[in-house]
Length: 105
Picture 1 (spheres, rainbow, N blue to C red):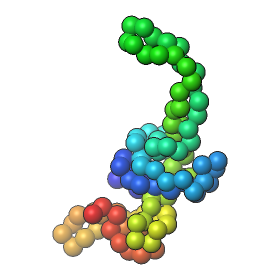
Picture 2: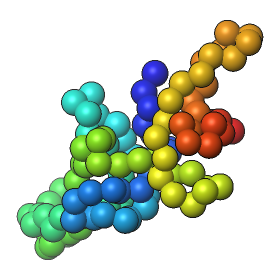
Picture 3: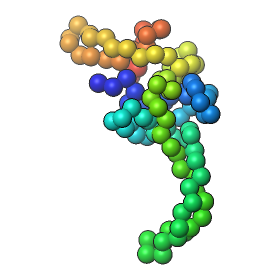
């Protein structure tokens, strides 16, 4: 069970994109996460007439190390660390360490 999952809203805490918020689009096995609108790079693309793809310079979101992002807590309006708790019925849930609120609602 990962602490950061696809669909989580995260905030970047270090690097050139510090302070930006976005939704996790993909989690890679090597510990990187792809966040929407964060760490955007310019990519030069050749045109492909077979697919109908025009050429030019396109923006492409690049992955960020998972240690540089925190899950955003909407109640406290800041990023918080995530931990796990086992409920009485045996189910395992993610919680925010500082507030104790459940991440998955």
